[in-house]
Image 1 (cartoon, rainbow over the protein chains, first blue to last red):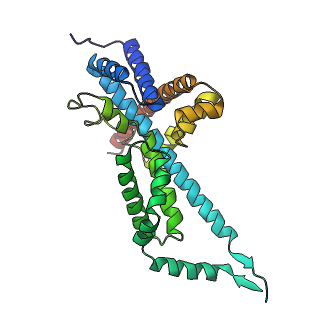
Image 2 (image 1 turned 60 degrees about the vertical axis):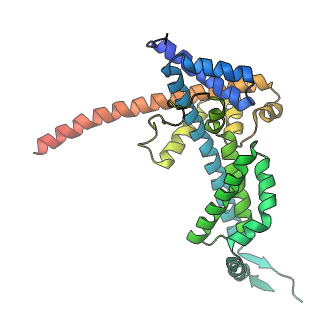
Image 3 (image 1 turned 180 degrees about the horizontal axis):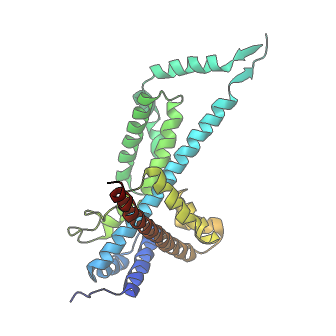
Length: 93
Length: 204
């Protein structure tokens, strides 16, 4: 039977467990035992799936700022380089 | 003798513009692939990354002539590979037995829908900055630099399990911070709206 989750403390627990699953996936490939555990965990109630999906999306969004930050660093680096490279002195013959 | 370097750069720019992005891409495709392989685990992701890097460079060049297409391609490939490497939804789909219901197919309502890209980035960075020093170090190395957990652990001289715990805690705290911020914004919005309506009715 599906467990009904209503209490905030339950939600907090689910959130914590969802972040632990995300960290576990981040660490390494899941073993077949872990995969079974994850699927069993998800099957507990729709609330589990909901929290995992939400937190996965948040994690992916945060990883996107990583790529945009490095793109910005590259842009700034090129801009600085251009500013410094305006004049050079070449040896005379 | 003084030369204006700008003239040299202009000439180089002209020369490079003649070279199509495609030929630069074909020329360094193998090296781009090896750059991407440093970050990704699955070979099937490779072709997508290379294609996206090409398209991004091509579009950027069309918009505004890129001075050094080769280095732009390498940087874009690296960034895309880092992004793919950290994308948890990509890996999660492999583990879920029944995705027909909702997971990752039916997306949760986007909590950031009302924010601009810049506001979203600021909120996420602010959330990351609230984390404790070590937790922040671990999370930022993983998210912003794309360093793998075991390398993060080695770099910071902590165990892999500790690094994993920091990742979980970091995400939990960031989520709490963002939820709180959004609730505050909603309260402010609700406070402002009746006030605005009141003003409007007074002007009628």
